[in-house]
Image 1: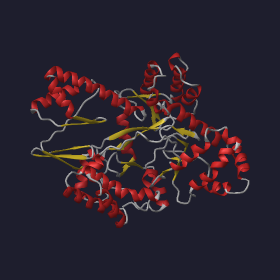
Image 2: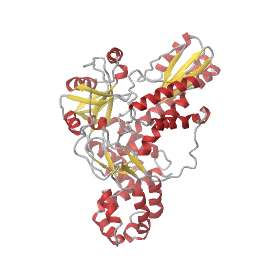
Image 3: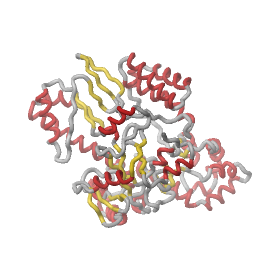
Image 4: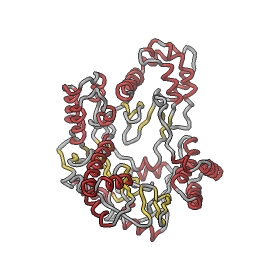
Length: 525
């Protein structure tokens, strides 16, 4: 049994160089592996010449030079000087490769779970354990270009620029594992934000190709019927098949003939079949749905004593119950699943009253209401203020309200960004908390290169970040909260803010300019 409540125990486990700790690919479990076993498995993956190739050294600077050549070329069109500077003028660091253990696909682990029936399962070095490859690096050379790709699909950008930028991202995905350097030679560039978009567009094109082939083979009416029953989420597909089984085999052959590098595996059943987290059940001519959990799912929800904002923890029972009420179609089965959920949450020390209230609130909606899609047409465009949660921090909302007039009238801050009052008001209204790393995240942390950059901007979240070693980030708009609580409420605050802003030029002025540039240059249509 692991008792991680003691910082000394966590530190001892963290520094143990004979083991590797990773979160399971699915199910929420934590996996402790022998380091030699883990490294052997990962190196076996990286030695596949079809997908990876060893390179001599870090190639981040060479890749960044290609991006600079791209943005300075004729195809960059109406790209502004600030946009070019954002894409090319930053310090890079090499991405790191690691693997998340797919415990749900290991027969040895499943057998151990069935035999041991405990909260902690011992299954040393299972040879059939595979890993999900992950490339992680917040500051690789292609990351910024990849992050702004959805916004490049605008009329002011040339088609040649979009395609060449995509080639750079896909063909220059380099990373390190240990002291060795590798480049991905096949497949969508792992770890890039553009990868899901690129994959979805590819499958969308293949679906159009499939429709044409079905119409040629079986006629337009049958093709329309099959496509209307075909459902897909990214690369997971589902279809209701009313035709004969022989045609189903032909259909799979058509799918696998759409592209030389794509292969569909198929699972079929006359009674029930899982799709994502939904179990579809067929009884005669009637379909019903139930929640689907993998056998390796730990139901390890956030512990109520965890250092997270109170409103986050109080919302968990309701949101989990709401999910069950939306998925489970039969009322009796739904009530059974809600009782199971209550037992899982009690193990995580959630108050029973809080759980009951969350379940009661979720059951107050009809299933059709829960399944309906809410309109996003009138959604206000705002810049969120994000900070790492710390229960000892002061509430910054009241401080920002007191600062509004000072920031609005001060000569120095007027030059930093436009319409200070409205910006600050929106920022306060849209306050968000980033949870701190828990014990699992700290123990399973990936060690990136120490060449990290401070005061960099996270494009994916639209916020200012300071990158620290590993995967964690500490977001802030102003420095130390305790310092500012004392500092901002003193007399002659405007004069002191003016002096302090000059002292904190790199932290405040440049990062806010970068933040506003990104939102205006790439996000606003």
